[in-house]
Amino acid sequence: MSSETLKLGKKKQSIFIDKVKELLPEGGNLGLCLTCGACSSGCPATGLEGMDPRKFLRMASLGMDEEITSTPWVWMCTMCQRCIYACPMEIDIPQLVYYARSAWPRESRPKGILGSCDMALRNDSCSAMGATPEDFSFVVEDVLEEYREAQPEFKDMQAPIDKKGAYFFLNQNSREPVTEPDEMVPLWKILHIVGADWTYGSKGWGGENYCMFLADDEAWEHIARTAAKQADELGCKVFLNTE
Amino acid sequence: MKIKFTVQDPCQIVRKSFGDPIADDLRFVVKTLVGEENFIDMTPNKSNNYCCGGGGGFLQSGYVDARRQYGEYKLKQILATKADYCITACHNCHAQIHDLAEHSGANYHTVHLWTLICLSLGILGENEREYLGPDLADVAVYGA
Ligand code: SF4
Ligand code: SF4
Image 1 (cartoon, rainbow over the protein chains, first blue to last red):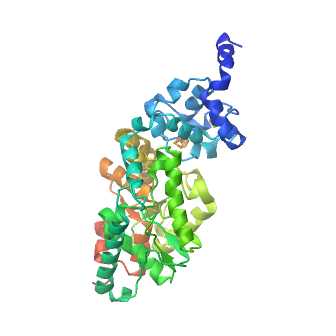
Image 2 (cartoon, helix red, strand yellow):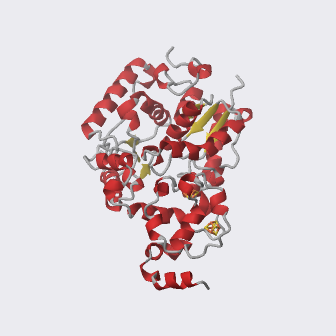
Image 3 (cartoon, rainbow over the protein chains, first blue to last red):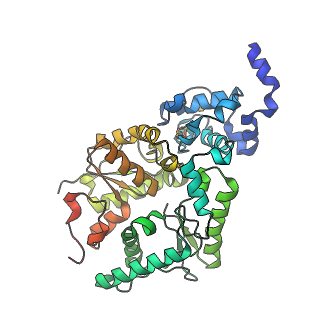
């Protein structure tokens, strides 16, 4: 055993990867790596910022906390979990990446993700584009009216918001109502012709959750709970996430 | 019309949630819509599929060059199928795969699943065709 290993062994209790292991079921298997490289060879983020999943895990295991909590690579791993799928030990590297993201000071995290999360916290829509519940219902009603008139087969089509007791609670990516409202219509038509009983919610309709990507636990839980609570209050049975 | 289609398995609903059974359902729907002979799968696929690079916040992270470099895997996979359309059932995938084509000059189109369902049913109006290519833009326009 090299002296370096012994030296690192002494600090073991305080290193980042041990804290993460405590948080994960089975410790995310983070200590079981065989260094086979199956994760890295099939990871599209391999090579970006000179990093790859095996290297990231090895550096974490060696206690190189400074490096793993400052490399921008953590924002380039999409947490797609292909590495877990490929790994003989099912090691949860993406969860380690998630905690490395959360080790960044909030204001230093990527501006685009931060901004989208903060937008979603502005009002009950939880929309990353900041649209209010009023904006949303205006657009939905306006588009629905237009299509009912222009396309007679759909004169009875519905796009309800807060319909009590609807079976399906459907959320909606903000991009459509905000920038390309006509793109909401094909899905409404499909739901209409199959006779689905569905509703949007005035609260929590925004389908995207950038606070989760930001690794801001409190904020992403707030967003998920706002949508779930609205679905419960309306008595909906199935939450349909279109994201 | 000899138009060929491939489909992107979203990591979120396939590998991370329901696995291969839902990927098979997705293929059942797509093949029913476009015809079995017009569907070409990417390799690898289903639970073993490569992420497109739009997930995890990458689209909003500001690391645009890195995102497109990540997407090279996906771009090559799509180009290898020689498909004219990549069908995406996820919002992030749609945005990323669309951007990969625009940026590289690849000539496939990126289309939402809902667009193709409505097109096949003959209920897709003229304003709902933003992502169709010229080959399908005027096909079975509802109300025309
Ligand atoms: S695939 Fe698993 S065991 Fe192999 S190097 Fe990666 S993390 Fe380690
Ligand atoms: S989760 Fe991250 S490290 Fe694992 S394969 Fe996907 S991008 Fe690579």
